Length: 418
View 1 (spheres, one colour):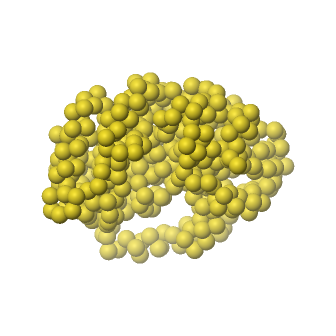
View 2 (cartoon, one colour):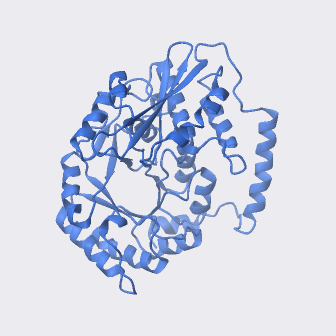
View 3 (cartoon, one colour):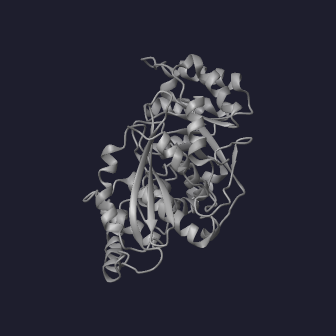
């Protein structure tokens, strides 16, 4: 066990045992609920200049391949200021998600756009399992747009009035979207030529896993060859997509130690916290997890058992900048880093950069870099800035107000999805 993990293991959490934790949580939840009832979080209507008067959406489609859609929201205020956000679409047309927007818009009209945390809490409570009224990607997009409009009202980037900046540039990684194992290295080199120095490889892009007890060995050999082909100057992350049994994950984690991967992401098809804690203690290869953590409470259950080293909750699944900051604050007390994926489009990248500059335990930001020239051109036309220009593995922090970018109306019209 490393010194860091030994320190964390010896750090008691107030004497609270795992068995007593559910009762403690219920008791505290009751207190918080009573506090909310006594002082409702619902933002009151206001006649101020930041009164929300409309929420609009735009959907564009990549020209090359027409595989991916970007959905953007625009929150408009009485002062003429507006904020933009991005709805994560997972590559699909966002029709189903945006069909929920009219009800959310109705709840926002006439309210103060600067009441960012109050709006977030209202959506968070309505998004609890009993309700699910506000889908997480829409909550994140609205939250991002509110931060943007408030920053514009202050003529300041989001990170400057949020306690930052904690850094002057942001480390980024790009995920390899290769179609087969044969072009994996060629795709990697193309991304490296674009300025990226950290690559995320999906287990699904490495070919079919063999059956039987020796199935993990070909995977290890492929990882060794990839490291040899790319050299030590390129950092690597392996995303297992939760496909491995625990025994194979343990073997793989140990095999990656001499290859110095940044971390092993979602190694197991089980998200049992005890299992992750056991794996974490058996290898010095850091472990990351994404899909199983959507809020600070879910993060706490992993953190208490020292089960993970990196939290990868995407911006869209964490509820936007406000939600990810809550997770980051929880993780900081356990010396755990945040490495969120920003999302598909440039507005998500801008929001990720603002988040990265506001927290001290940020590690690296996932961004999307299309390989096709037409699709790269589309992104550039959308924001017409150097926002996504990577240099030696880093992006510069935006300096303009709000998120730091605008969407060009002509480009939105040009690439509008049919």
